[in-house]
Amino acid sequence: MSANISTQTMVNYLVAPETLVETNGEGPAYELGPREGKPVIIVLGVTEIIEQESLHVSIWGSADGEDWGKQALFWFPQKFYAGSSPAALDLKQLQGVKFLRARWEVNRWGRGDPRPCFKFGVEIQELVP
Image 1 (cartoon, one colour):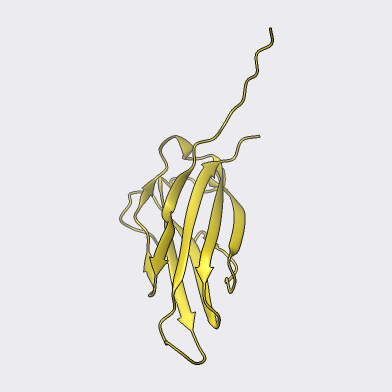
Image 2 (cartoon, rainbow, N blue to C red):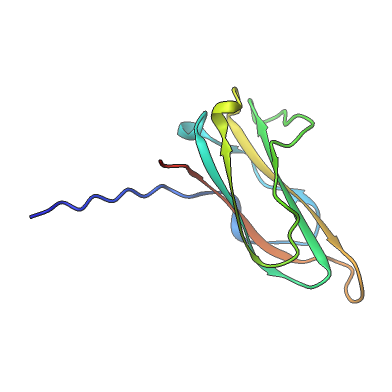
């Protein structure tokens, strides 16, 4: 009889999947807990987008969940199409960061409804070697 061991990382979200946004905004503060000081993978997943608009998502860090500083830790490339964009973030290099938060900027141009409209989510998981 052989034992089959599989390890799965728990996925959490900085922005819940399928979140609908039409304006600039930010997600709630996410406490890193056991992920503090470890490398993580952050995945931006855009599931719905209309033509002639863009989504720009940044990740911010905080020591106390209140002061987020003046500069993002990381910016995803601007998105014009649906799809997933993974990024590794080494929190070992960011001493004192105990909270993360996603912020987004939306833009719409061209004809039609001037309001942008996106559905997306931002997941976080520990990077397992």
